[in-house]
Length: 192
Image (cartoon, rainbow, N blue to C red; front, side):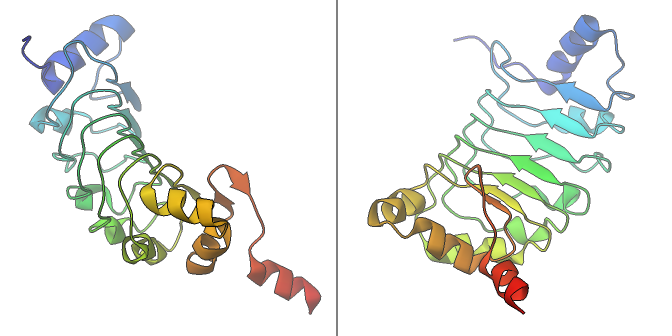
């Protein structure tokens, strides 16, 4: 089997293809590498100006080495093999969007560090308990959540109470699973 592509090798290919320097770039796309990237290694530290990083469609198992990315606002890690959210602490004060659908996440431990996170796309993972979903209430800025395709959503959509239960637990959401909706609090205030 072919050896995995390293972040360093992917950055060299990306620089050759785009003509940009990784250290100066605000958007870096390292998705769908052949062979795929398996580790978020220390080479990511070179991306000091990066605001938007895409590592989707690889074979990454762990979020790591984001320490140098102080300007990172959007992180795309969809379609990997990520099992948990450890490693996000380094970007907890800057990250506004996390795209992490199609992974193997069942627990949301560690999500609370994301103080500016507005958008979380975490569809098609393995979250099955309300106790885990409830951890999203610790995100003060969260307004857009895509959670479809998790066992918890599938069960409650089948029961016909997903929207009601999810918005009751996260009343600040403006958009759930791609659908805009007005939360009950807004309706109550308009009646005053």
